[in-house]
Length: 149
Image (tube, rainbow, N blue to C red; front, top):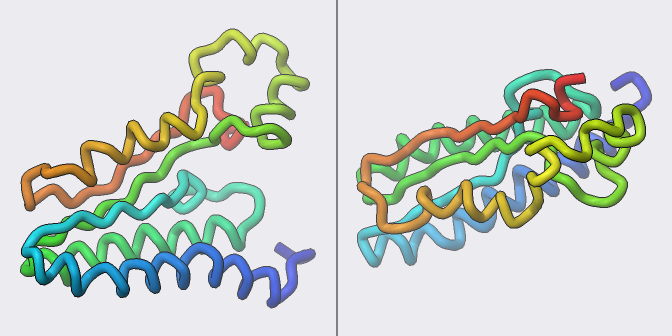
């Protein structure tokens, strides 16, 4: 955190929280008009526990809070709001690459399967025509995740 700048914090907040709030604000009138809707905010396990890049974790915590508050605010409009907080996702140059270099056994573990497509699987039940009372948070952080090191 000491090496980050105020601009780093502003940029992270703009990218993660402000963009989400703008998109939701644009969709709510349509969802209100149809009498049904679902908002799924893609947060991160970094919003629940300390991790490297504190500005990222702070913005993800803000998204989780946003989902909780919007869930209360929009429930009377029959709009469900949920946050999905996944652990580390495999992508080239990400945390899994360094873990695989550090511990080659990680290649064979089930956690090596956590890819972007899994994000859609976690989100699907929350955005479909589920009961209108479904408002929750979902966190997934595999035991061998780089965020647990």
